[in-house]
Length: 498
Image 1: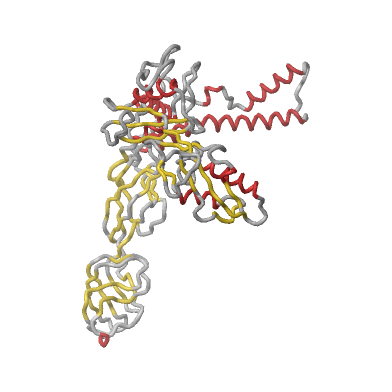
Image 2 (image 1 turned 30 degrees about the vertical axis):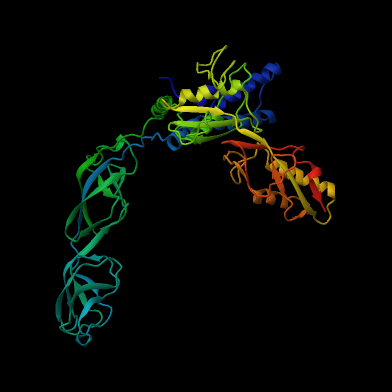
């Protein structure tokens, strides 16, 4: 398999020295006898430009790989194999804690009744679940309590509900077992390679716990780490008695090589031939039709579709059938060669042979070559209908009759133009098959025209005859329809300005 496209293929030099030598060769060719000098301004400039050009070439070369990787992962959905980080298991042993682990922060009295927590000065470490003992430092009175445990920083220790047997003054001591935390993302070194734990771990004083650590990067270089015996924590954990290896790092895998990945992308793209699925897909595909060189085939500028429509009998909801209407960029009909194939294709004779110098498909034959089997694709021209409009308006202050007439005429013609009819809201492209002219929309177009103060009520009339009388919404003829209006159907003489 050949390598995927790289900008290196363009011959971009990434060597500053080579680029400088190219400049020098050209200078000596144009100025025989030229000898560079470190003090010459042009030579200093050439060195600077050579450095810039080398950096740019490097960025371009690296950028090609990044460009295709981004395209393939985000748009095509071909995952890049990021590699796997190796994992090891270590054993952390906590030192035995001092007997006294906390001091009360307030008096605890019998008169206070039953209590559910012991107030303490903020704990430096956690306290393990189990039995704790409170001791009065003066009278040496003691009492045992059961606790579910507490965390570092807590200012009280939850205990099972009971009443103190004695009064305990502030400063009484509490004995028990401390509990230590190994926070998530604590850094370790195994044979000088970086590892971290992804989850926190809690270890009671005097006990040990196994902790899984993961290499900070993917790659096989981390496999076996720890087997050399050098296992330590980077962060200071003063309560740790020892850290030993349980199992050396394994499972690490290198990220996919760029060349291998881009070759996979090449193969995958070769298998992903475009196939229209929905009716909208057929319209989108039609926009990508390429006229065959040397023919009179035209570019497709607009396309829309109706699922299940059969133009032969005007029926709808037919199974496995779609109708696609296409125009040029101005909304006008395309010739038969473009629709059905050259040199003499027609709706009854769709050329479906592969394009050649003497024959080949148009839009219909091309879409048929991409369609699902037994799926019928009808390619048609929209139905065009001239629309006539008359209206009376009141001119805004400062506008003369002629300018208002021309402005209204231009607004109506733009609204009813086949190149713009059916455009989605706030969009310069697209074609929603709209077969109704709404009186309110046409009225709004005229009302918002420069120079129009207001439209005189009841005067807007439009239709398909030179003397329109319709004042309500009207349907355009045809399943896929476009209006056509000119200065003849919307004359300034039909626009009365008062």
